[in-house]
Length: 333
Image (cartoon, rainbow, N blue to C red; front, side, top):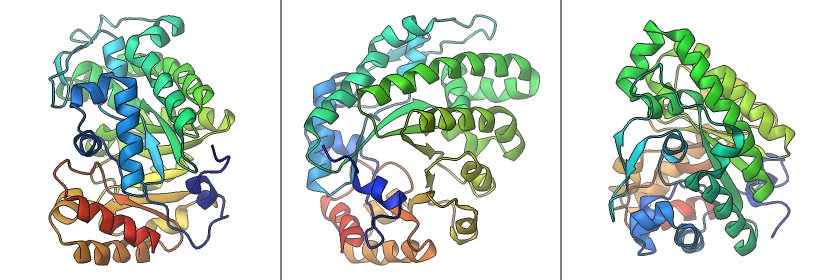
Protein backbone atom coordinates (compact mmCIF):
# COMPACT_ATOMS: atom_id res chain seq x y z
CA UNK A 1 0.00 0.00 0.00
CA UNK A 2 1.32 3.46 -0.88
CA UNK A 3 2.50 5.46 2.12
CA UNK A 4 1.21 8.59 0.42
CA UNK A 5 -2.14 8.32 -1.33
CA UNK A 6 -2.62 10.86 -4.10
CA UNK A 7 -5.02 12.92 -1.99
CA UNK A 8 -2.47 13.24 0.83
CA UNK A 9 0.21 14.27 -1.67
CA UNK A 10 -2.19 16.89 -3.02
CA UNK A 11 -2.84 18.29 0.45
CA UNK A 12 0.88 18.45 1.13
CA UNK A 13 1.62 20.28 -2.12
CA UNK A 14 3.59 17.37 -3.55
CA UNK A 15 1.23 17.01 -6.52
CA UNK A 16 0.85 20.47 -8.00
CA UNK A 17 -0.33 19.31 -11.42
CA UNK A 18 -2.89 16.71 -10.30
CA UNK A 19 -6.57 16.99 -9.44
CA UNK A 20 -7.82 14.24 -7.11
CA UNK A 21 -11.21 12.69 -7.84
CA UNK A 22 -13.29 11.93 -4.73
CA UNK A 23 -16.89 11.03 -5.64
CA UNK A 24 -19.19 9.71 -2.92
CA UNK A 25 -20.24 6.28 -4.18
CA UNK A 26 -22.82 4.48 -2.04
CA UNK A 27 -25.99 3.36 -3.80
CA UNK A 28 -24.19 3.82 -7.11
CA UNK A 29 -21.39 1.47 -6.01
CA UNK A 30 -23.84 -1.16 -4.79
CA UNK A 31 -25.78 -1.07 -8.04
CA UNK A 32 -22.65 -0.99 -10.23
CA UNK A 33 -21.22 -4.01 -8.40
CA UNK A 34 -24.60 -5.84 -8.35
CA UNK A 35 -24.65 -5.92 -4.54
CA UNK A 36 -28.05 -5.69 -2.77
CA UNK A 37 -28.02 -2.59 -0.61
CA UNK A 38 -28.69 -4.53 2.58
CA UNK A 39 -25.45 -6.43 1.96
CA UNK A 40 -23.65 -3.20 1.11
CA UNK A 41 -24.59 -1.90 4.57
CA UNK A 42 -24.06 -5.06 6.62
CA UNK A 43 -21.58 -7.35 4.82
CA UNK A 44 -17.98 -6.20 5.20
CA UNK A 45 -16.63 -8.06 2.18
CA UNK A 46 -19.51 -7.09 -0.10
CA UNK A 47 -19.20 -3.43 0.86
CA UNK A 48 -15.45 -3.30 0.35
CA UNK A 49 -15.40 -5.24 -2.89
CA UNK A 50 -18.10 -2.97 -4.33
CA UNK A 51 -16.09 0.10 -3.31
CA UNK A 52 -12.85 -1.20 -4.77
CA UNK A 53 -14.53 -2.35 -7.99
CA UNK A 54 -16.22 1.02 -8.48
CA UNK A 55 -13.10 3.02 -7.61
CA UNK A 56 -11.11 1.07 -10.19
CA UNK A 57 -13.76 1.43 -12.88
CA UNK A 58 -14.05 5.21 -12.47
CA UNK A 59 -10.51 6.20 -11.44
CA UNK A 60 -11.62 7.35 -7.99
CA UNK A 61 -8.83 8.22 -5.59
CA UNK A 62 -10.47 6.91 -2.43
CA UNK A 63 -12.53 4.18 -0.81
CA UNK A 64 -14.71 4.66 2.25
CA UNK A 65 -16.99 2.98 4.77
CA UNK A 66 -20.10 5.08 4.04
CA UNK A 67 -23.51 3.53 3.46
CA UNK A 68 -26.01 5.11 5.88
CA UNK A 69 -25.96 7.22 9.07
CA UNK A 70 -27.27 4.62 11.51
CA UNK A 71 -24.26 2.69 12.83
CA UNK A 72 -23.90 4.80 15.96
CA UNK A 73 -27.61 5.31 16.60
CA UNK A 74 -28.22 1.57 16.34
CA UNK A 75 -25.56 1.07 19.02
CA UNK A 76 -27.53 3.47 21.23
CA UNK A 77 -30.73 1.48 20.75
CA UNK A 78 -32.39 2.74 17.57
CA UNK A 79 -34.50 0.21 15.65
CA UNK A 80 -33.17 0.02 12.10
CA UNK A 81 -34.81 -1.98 9.31
CA UNK A 82 -32.63 -3.06 6.39
CA UNK A 83 -34.74 -3.74 3.27
CA UNK A 84 -33.16 -6.11 0.75
CA UNK A 85 -32.32 -3.43 -1.80
CA UNK A 86 -33.17 0.01 -0.45
CA UNK A 87 -31.88 2.50 2.07
CA UNK A 88 -32.10 1.49 5.75
CA UNK A 89 -35.10 2.83 7.61
CA UNK A 90 -35.24 3.97 11.22
CA UNK A 91 -38.44 2.57 12.72
CA UNK A 92 -37.81 3.72 16.28
CA UNK A 93 -35.54 6.48 17.57
CA UNK A 94 -33.05 5.64 20.29
CA UNK A 95 -34.06 8.75 22.22
CA UNK A 96 -37.84 8.95 22.10
CA UNK A 97 -37.58 10.32 25.65
CA UNK A 98 -34.80 12.87 26.08
CA UNK A 99 -34.42 11.77 29.70
CA UNK A 100 -33.80 8.13 28.77
CA UNK A 101 -30.40 8.31 27.07
CA UNK A 102 -28.65 4.95 27.00
CA UNK A 103 -25.19 5.39 28.51
CA UNK A 104 -22.53 3.06 27.09
CA UNK A 105 -18.94 2.46 28.12
CA UNK A 106 -16.34 2.69 25.35
CA UNK A 107 -15.93 -1.10 25.39
CA UNK A 108 -19.68 -1.64 25.06
CA UNK A 109 -19.93 0.88 22.23
CA UNK A 110 -16.97 -0.46 20.26
CA UNK A 111 -18.29 -4.02 20.56
CA UNK A 112 -21.60 -3.19 18.86
CA UNK A 113 -21.77 -5.08 15.55
CA UNK A 114 -21.88 -2.17 13.12
CA UNK A 115 -19.28 -0.22 15.09
CA UNK A 116 -16.91 -3.19 15.06
CA UNK A 117 -17.60 -3.75 11.36
CA UNK A 118 -16.22 -0.31 10.56
CA UNK A 119 -12.70 -1.34 11.53
CA UNK A 120 -13.09 -4.62 9.67
CA UNK A 121 -13.97 -2.68 6.52
CA UNK A 122 -10.92 -0.48 6.88
CA UNK A 123 -8.68 -3.48 7.48
CA UNK A 124 -10.06 -5.09 4.30
CA UNK A 125 -9.29 -1.92 2.34
CA UNK A 126 -5.79 -1.81 3.83
CA UNK A 127 -5.07 -5.38 2.75
CA UNK A 128 -6.52 -4.95 -0.75
CA UNK A 129 -5.52 -1.38 -1.58
CA UNK A 130 -4.18 -1.61 -5.16
CA UNK A 131 -1.96 1.42 -4.81
CA UNK A 132 -2.51 5.00 -3.79
CA UNK A 133 -6.17 5.00 -2.74
CA UNK A 134 -7.05 7.02 0.33
CA UNK A 135 -8.85 4.87 2.92
CA UNK A 136 -11.48 6.92 4.72
CA UNK A 137 -13.27 5.97 7.91
CA UNK A 138 -16.32 7.82 9.18
CA UNK A 139 -18.15 9.08 12.26
CA UNK A 140 -21.39 10.99 12.69
CA UNK A 141 -20.86 14.58 13.73
CA UNK A 142 -22.38 16.05 16.91
CA UNK A 143 -25.60 17.55 15.59
CA UNK A 144 -26.18 14.83 13.00
CA UNK A 145 -25.86 12.17 15.67
CA UNK A 146 -28.24 13.95 18.01
CA UNK A 147 -30.78 14.19 15.17
CA UNK A 148 -30.30 10.49 14.41
CA UNK A 149 -31.04 9.65 18.04
CA UNK A 150 -33.96 12.00 18.54
CA UNK A 151 -35.45 12.66 15.09
CA UNK A 152 -34.76 15.98 13.41
CA UNK A 153 -38.03 17.67 14.37
CA UNK A 154 -37.71 16.90 18.08
CA UNK A 155 -33.97 17.56 17.98
CA UNK A 156 -34.36 21.08 16.65
CA UNK A 157 -37.07 21.87 19.20
CA UNK A 158 -34.69 20.63 21.89
CA UNK A 159 -32.06 23.16 20.79
CA UNK A 160 -34.48 25.87 21.90
CA UNK A 161 -36.20 24.16 24.81
CA UNK A 162 -33.53 22.01 26.49
CA UNK A 163 -30.10 23.17 25.27
CA UNK A 164 -28.18 21.95 28.30
CA UNK A 165 -29.56 18.42 28.00
CA UNK A 166 -28.72 18.44 24.30
CA UNK A 167 -25.14 19.46 25.05
CA UNK A 168 -24.79 16.74 27.68
CA UNK A 169 -26.05 14.03 25.33
CA UNK A 170 -23.89 15.30 22.46
CA UNK A 171 -20.88 15.26 24.78
CA UNK A 172 -21.52 11.65 25.81
CA UNK A 173 -21.88 10.61 22.16
CA UNK A 174 -18.76 12.45 21.07
CA UNK A 175 -16.69 11.07 23.94
CA UNK A 176 -17.43 7.67 22.41
CA UNK A 177 -16.61 8.96 18.93
CA UNK A 178 -13.03 9.58 20.09
CA UNK A 179 -12.12 5.89 20.64
CA UNK A 180 -14.18 5.01 17.55
CA UNK A 181 -11.93 7.31 15.53
CA UNK A 182 -8.84 5.80 17.13
CA UNK A 183 -10.02 2.27 16.34
CA UNK A 184 -10.49 3.15 12.67
CA UNK A 185 -7.10 4.82 12.35
CA UNK A 186 -5.40 1.85 14.01
CA UNK A 187 -7.10 -0.39 11.44
CA UNK A 188 -5.52 1.58 8.60
CA UNK A 189 -7.62 4.67 7.84
CA UNK A 190 -5.64 7.56 6.37
CA UNK A 191 -8.61 9.87 6.85
CA UNK A 192 -11.71 10.14 9.00
CA UNK A 193 -14.79 11.81 7.60
CA UNK A 194 -17.22 13.61 9.89
CA UNK A 195 -20.76 13.75 8.57
CA UNK A 196 -22.82 16.55 10.12
CA UNK A 197 -25.46 17.25 7.49
CA UNK A 198 -28.06 18.63 9.91
CA UNK A 199 -25.86 21.69 10.42
CA UNK A 200 -26.93 23.19 7.10
CA UNK A 201 -30.46 23.46 8.52
CA UNK A 202 -29.82 25.04 11.92
CA UNK A 203 -28.31 28.46 11.27
CA UNK A 204 -24.97 29.95 12.23
CA UNK A 205 -25.71 30.54 15.92
CA UNK A 206 -26.83 27.00 16.65
CA UNK A 207 -23.97 25.61 14.54
CA UNK A 208 -21.44 27.51 16.61
CA UNK A 209 -23.09 26.52 19.89
CA UNK A 210 -23.84 22.83 19.35
CA UNK A 211 -21.66 21.52 16.51
CA UNK A 212 -18.52 23.57 15.92
CA UNK A 213 -16.79 22.92 19.28
CA UNK A 214 -17.08 19.15 18.97
CA UNK A 215 -16.20 19.09 15.27
CA UNK A 216 -13.05 20.98 16.20
CA UNK A 217 -12.26 18.52 19.02
CA UNK A 218 -12.81 15.49 16.78
CA UNK A 219 -10.54 16.93 14.10
CA UNK A 220 -7.82 17.75 16.62
CA UNK A 221 -8.02 14.15 17.84
CA UNK A 222 -7.75 12.85 14.27
CA UNK A 223 -4.67 14.99 13.69
CA UNK A 224 -3.03 13.88 16.96
CA UNK A 225 -3.39 10.30 15.73
CA UNK A 226 -1.62 11.14 12.47
CA UNK A 227 -4.58 11.07 10.08
CA UNK A 228 -6.40 13.75 8.11
CA UNK A 229 -9.99 14.88 8.55
CA UNK A 230 -12.81 15.49 6.09
CA UNK A 231 -15.88 17.51 7.09
CA UNK A 232 -19.07 16.79 5.16
CA UNK A 233 -22.09 19.04 5.62
CA UNK A 234 -24.37 18.87 2.60
CA UNK A 235 -26.90 21.55 1.73
CA UNK A 236 -26.41 25.30 1.54
CA UNK A 237 -23.48 25.94 3.88
CA UNK A 238 -22.63 29.41 2.58
CA UNK A 239 -23.14 31.06 5.97
CA UNK A 240 -21.21 28.46 7.97
CA UNK A 241 -18.37 27.70 5.54
CA UNK A 242 -15.95 30.09 7.28
CA UNK A 243 -16.59 28.20 10.52
CA UNK A 244 -16.28 24.84 8.77
CA UNK A 245 -12.85 25.89 7.53
CA UNK A 246 -11.97 27.13 11.03
CA UNK A 247 -12.60 23.65 12.48
CA UNK A 248 -9.24 22.66 11.00
CA UNK A 249 -10.63 20.02 8.65
CA UNK A 250 -8.16 19.17 5.90
CA UNK A 251 -10.90 18.53 3.33
CA UNK A 252 -14.06 20.62 3.48
CA UNK A 253 -16.92 19.31 1.35
CA UNK A 254 -18.99 21.93 -0.46
CA UNK A 255 -22.41 21.11 -1.89
CA UNK A 256 -23.77 22.54 -5.14
CA UNK A 257 -26.08 24.91 -3.25
CA UNK A 258 -22.99 27.00 -2.48
CA UNK A 259 -22.98 28.84 -5.79
CA UNK A 260 -19.57 30.53 -5.55
CA UNK A 261 -16.58 29.06 -3.72
CA UNK A 262 -14.18 31.88 -4.56
CA UNK A 263 -14.81 34.00 -1.43
CA UNK A 264 -13.75 31.11 0.80
CA UNK A 265 -10.38 30.34 -0.82
CA UNK A 266 -8.48 33.03 1.15
CA UNK A 267 -9.72 31.45 4.40
CA UNK A 268 -8.04 28.10 3.68
CA UNK A 269 -4.92 27.14 5.61
CA UNK A 270 -1.82 25.97 3.74
CA UNK A 271 -2.88 22.31 3.73
CA UNK A 272 -6.66 22.75 3.54
CA UNK A 273 -8.69 22.19 0.38
CA UNK A 274 -12.31 22.29 -0.70
CA UNK A 275 -14.06 19.30 -2.27
CA UNK A 276 -17.01 19.51 -4.64
CA UNK A 277 -19.23 20.88 -5.84
CA UNK A 278 -21.20 19.80 -8.93
CA UNK A 279 -24.95 19.19 -8.63
CA UNK A 280 -25.33 15.39 -8.36
CA UNK A 281 -28.69 15.26 -10.14
CA UNK A 282 -29.09 18.17 -12.56
CA UNK A 283 -25.49 17.92 -13.77
CA UNK A 284 -23.97 14.51 -12.99
CA UNK A 285 -27.09 12.45 -13.61
CA UNK A 286 -28.92 14.50 -16.24
CA UNK A 287 -26.34 16.30 -18.41
CA UNK A 288 -24.25 14.98 -21.29
CA UNK A 289 -20.61 13.96 -20.77
CA UNK A 290 -19.37 17.08 -22.54
CA UNK A 291 -21.61 19.32 -20.45
CA UNK A 292 -20.26 17.63 -17.33
CA UNK A 293 -16.66 18.30 -18.38
CA UNK A 294 -17.50 21.94 -19.00
CA UNK A 295 -19.20 22.26 -15.60
CA UNK A 296 -16.22 20.61 -13.91
CA UNK A 297 -13.81 23.04 -15.54
CA UNK A 298 -15.94 25.91 -14.24
CA UNK A 299 -15.80 24.80 -10.60
CA UNK A 300 -12.08 24.00 -10.84
CA UNK A 301 -11.52 27.56 -12.06
CA UNK A 302 -13.20 28.91 -8.91
CA UNK A 303 -10.63 27.22 -6.64
CA UNK A 304 -7.45 26.78 -8.70
CA UNK A 305 -5.12 24.23 -7.18
CA UNK A 306 -7.19 23.92 -3.99
CA UNK A 307 -10.15 21.79 -5.10
CA UNK A 308 -10.70 18.03 -5.05
CA UNK A 309 -13.22 17.28 -7.77
CA UNK A 310 -16.49 15.66 -6.75
CA UNK A 311 -20.20 16.11 -6.82
CA UNK A 312 -21.55 18.14 -3.92
CA UNK A 313 -22.96 15.00 -2.32
CA UNK A 314 -23.64 11.34 -3.14
CA UNK A 315 -23.57 10.23 -6.78
CA UNK A 316 -27.15 9.14 -7.62
CA UNK A 317 -27.58 5.41 -8.28
CA UNK A 318 -29.12 6.12 -11.70
CA UNK A 319 -26.29 8.32 -12.97
CA UNK A 320 -25.00 6.95 -16.31
CA UNK A 321 -21.56 5.38 -16.15
CA UNK A 322 -20.46 7.52 -19.10
CA UNK A 323 -21.22 10.64 -17.05
CA UNK A 324 -19.09 9.47 -14.12
CA UNK A 325 -16.24 8.70 -16.51
CA UNK A 326 -16.59 12.18 -17.98
CA UNK A 327 -16.25 13.67 -14.50
CA UNK A 328 -13.19 11.50 -13.83
CA UNK A 329 -11.70 12.57 -17.16
CA UNK A 330 -12.09 16.20 -16.15
CA UNK A 331 -9.86 15.49 -13.15
CA UNK A 332 -7.40 13.17 -14.81
CA UNK A 333 -6.73 14.98 -18.11
